[in-house]
Length: 303
Image (cartoon, rainbow, N blue to C red; front, side, top):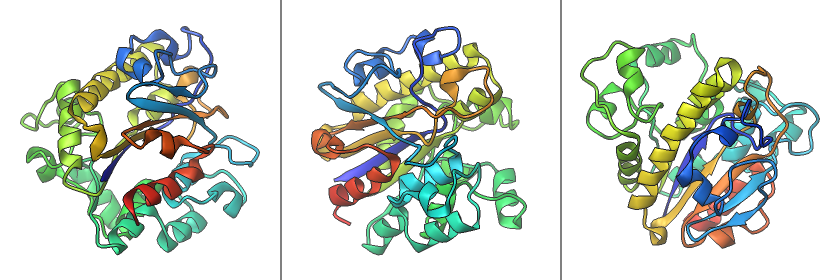
């Protein structure tokens, strides 16, 4: 049994409006199949398909205001209602109270303390490592959680040797944005297959895709559609490689954003959680908010 957690930053369940919602406009046969043939929208509701259970999931957790990345990601990885514990939704990076809660306990730490293995599978370029190591930049909540458990951040060498993936899935950004000319380039389908292969080396592996949040804040509908269609190809590769009896693949998010292109603010919409694996129905039972993921992962992994 192992768990692959695919975190897609800033995607919520919005209206069926193809002028502002990439989920309503994009061609997404694989993602829609995971929701029993439905688009990922506010109206979709809980859906069960042969490969997955799709669960609209509450990121608000009883607190007024717009959910934020720092507290939402921490809730995903601690199993605690972080907004209620700190008295607000907070982000994008974790403040001191969130960092204290992540240091106290998170799923990475639970896995490692039980003698099992965990990894954060995104490869970060040298400038990112320099910013973190110098203290100039603060890790996000999920990065902080991994680091607090002693899980190392992947780097350029890990990307080159196939032990990690680029945050944009294909590695194209390392060429076009970072100036590399010899790092791996993958198709989305190849990236999905490699993601599963790498995840099999660990009891718990997490992969983060944050470009959806960036596009949600200041991108265009066309850019959002492109990102989702790439992710659709990634998930086709995942599904073709993943054996449902080997564990659980989970997809979730921290807050809504990209489903309302043109608004720079987060939404208060539910976010999608997708559970893939033989134990999908058991995992989905009673799941209502982001704090419900860790207790179920704990039970599934035996930690």
